[in-house]
Amino acid sequence: MSRSQSTLTLDSNEVTHLLNLFPKGLVAVDLETTGLSPLVDKIIEIAAVKITEAGEISTYHQLINPLIEIPEFTIQFHGLTNDHLKLSPTIKKPLREFWDFVGRYPMIAHNSTFDLGYLIKSSHDFQIDFPPLDIYDSCRFTRAVYKNKDAAPSNFKLSTLSEYFGIELQHHVAMEDTLACLKIMAGTIQTQTDHKVALEKSFVFRLSHFDRNDCFNYSTRLDGLKTLVQAKELVVLDYRGGSAVGKIRPVRPIGLMPLPQGPVLFAECLLTGMNKSFLLKKIKSYKKLEASYWQPGTHA
Image (cartoon, rainbow, N blue to C red; front, side, top):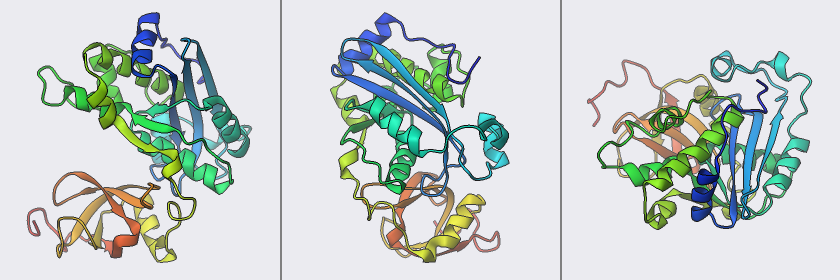
C-alpha cells in the first residue's frame, strides 16, 4: 500500500457527524517529521483530508526531502529514511500546495500544536502566507468529552483512541493517522449530545495570532538548550514565572515550538509529572541535569 493511500475510509454517517460539528467543512492534517521540535526539526510527510460543506472528500499527500539526516530514533516510528526521500521535493512547493488545498476551512489534528507548529514555522521560513484559520485538537476534544466518565479510554493517544473505537490503525503513516483523527472525532461526537463546550475546549489558536517575529525568534544563548533537547537530555531550568517560584525546574524536554505568545520549550516538569510550556524568553539559565544534582522528591 502506498503511503498516499489508506486502509481507512470515512462512511456517510461519520461525515454527517463531522459536519454537525463543523457545518462549513474542515481539513484534518497529520505530519511525519525528523523530530519533536518544530523550531528546529523538519517535515518529511504531509497528509490532509478535506470535507467540504457539501460532504465531498478530497485528500492531499506529499513526501518531503528534509535536506538533513533523519535521526534513527524517528525512523523506528515512521520508517522513512533519507534514501526513501532523496527524490522527493523539498518543502517550499508542497507547502504552497498544502495551503491552497486547505483554503479557508478550519483545521484539526491530533495534538495539533505540534503539527501546526511545523507548518507555521516552515511557512515563516519561506515567507509563505497562511490563512487566518481556527485550529482544533481532536485529543483535547475527546478528553473534554470522556474525562471523569465511566468506560473512558485509558489515555488520549491516537493509538489508544483508535483501539477504543475499533479502528485498525497503521500508526505513523500520515494519511492513516489523518483519517483516524477524523474517525475518532466522529465516534466521539456520537456519544455527546452537546458539543459546544467540548469544541470550545478543543480550540488551540487562530493562525492570525502568530506574529512573524516574536513567535519564532529566540536568543542565540539558547543554542545549547536546542542541543540538549535534540539529545533528549534531562535539563534544569532557572525560570522566571509559573507557580514554582524560587525552585529549580528539572524537566524532560519534548520539543521547541512556536506559540502565539512566543517560542516555548514543551517539557515534562519532573516536580509535578505534568507537561508544561516554558516560554524561552523567561528561561534565565539552563544546564544538563546531573543525577547527583537532583533526585525525585528532594526539591518538591
